[in-house]
Amino acid sequence: MIKKSLAVLIACLFLVNLAHSQDKPNYLGQTNTITTAVPFLLIAPDARSGALGDAGGATTPDASSMHWNPAKYAFIESKAGFSASYSPWLRAIVSDINLAYVAGYYRLDDKQTIAGSLLYFTLGDITFTDIQGSTIGNYRPNEFSIDATYSRKFSETWSGAVAARYINSNLTQGVTVQGQDTKPGQSVAADIAVYHQSELNWRNFEYAEFALGINISNIGSKISYSDATTDKDFIPTNLRIAPRLTLDLDDYNRLSFTIDVNKLLVPTPPIYAQDTLGNPIIEDGQRVIEAGMDPNVSVVQGMIQSWHDAPGGFEEEMREFYFATGVEYWYNKVFAVRGGFFYEDKLKGNRKYFTLGAGLKYNVFGLDFSYLIPMEQQNPLENTLRFTLTFDFSEFE
Image (cartoon, rainbow, N blue to C red):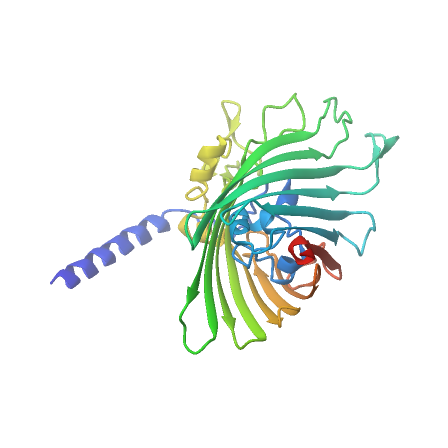
């Protein structure tokens, strides 16, 4: 009787929701990409994760863990180390746009680790002109972020971390645009992360390990490039949930599977009302919203609102999740082969690509490479070889 009543209730709720949705216009077929300021903060900076489809929230800890999940540092085995990464950008078009990343860590004791990193993105040399086409000057726009974190073990299987970040986006070089003076956009942000790692007794494998990483990154103030405007842009606050399974096939062969599930915690752009001529409808100096919610809200409200503000309702909210999957094979902890796939819904950016890569570790040094193969559209990193050089200072001992 209880099961029958529950089935009737579910059916009634479904019919009510269906009838309600039929009264609404269908907004699901429209492209509605979420955009933010400083998107360089979401670019995979290191070659290892770049070869795993941009997955890194629960991969085994390394020097580049700051970008993916700083809580992983508490489980890192070596005493200290650092990495340096380089990624050419739009290599097929220009030669002076690139992303550079340097990260380092130091383990205070068995439970505590501190780390820091620098992410630098340069757009190369650009000639600025005015509205008449006259040259204003030659500039080198750039963006960078400086991070620091403290990571600590809560138990033998759990750790947590808090990271602080300073962001500087100098895209206009102080040039006056349409009579308005510009300035570098600046913001401060924080990451909150947890990480779990435990051994499994699974089938006949010599060793099996499960890991789970959760990281909310770039929780910070909005950015503006001029004092004359009151409208500021959100930075890319992002939720990352990542499980991993690692299997030791024997003494020499190790295989890992990982997936990162991501969602931007910023408001979804609404659908604005238009008249019969396609002009926006204005009331009280503001554009009228036909579907969705007002995106001009505070950072905290925007994080909460991001779960229920899509014009297309629940189905569109689900499309805002994007996924990164990767497989990593190690032979004797010396040589690695990697592959991955990145997926984003076609109405939310349509980024889809395969990635390949390899890694080599010998004594103190390690070297990783990655290569990206786009599927649906061109990618700034296609036909580009990215690399990361790592140093493990504990090997000196």
